Image (cartoon, rainbow, N blue to C red; front, side):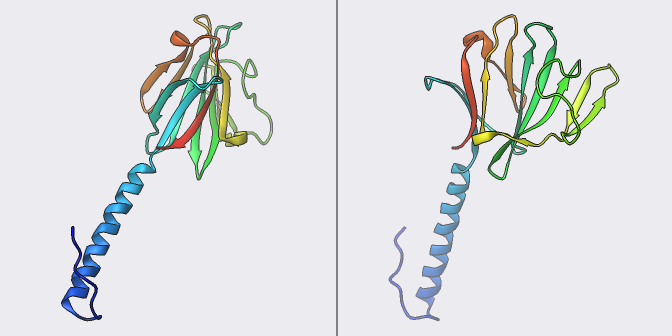
Length: 169
């Protein structure tokens, strides 16, 4: 679009020029907002990208994993809030079998009707906004769940050191 030359305030050309600038600024803002969408990225220590997926509007995800000795399923839930990655919840069939454990000042512990436990409101910020993990084997699989999409990390990269990060698009 070609803009008319700027003229003195109060003229019709100034009005057209101002409206055109506002429309272009709005389009640029919309494009920038689209670029600012957040992606969840899983990479190996050698830099191989295993998963890149958009975060849902609530910016949460979970990791489902099986304890290799006890063979029980554990679910850790994470969130991205104001530029910080947090562990927010954990679901486990037994207290202190694996993972975070419960102690005074760390979240709220609830026993669920099936006898398992939910540790909620943990809100533990992760150092460097990175979650480091070792992807489990087929005996202890690791599955990343984002907005209903399941990424079976153990199927393609068992026993691999990886990191989960949130990145702008």
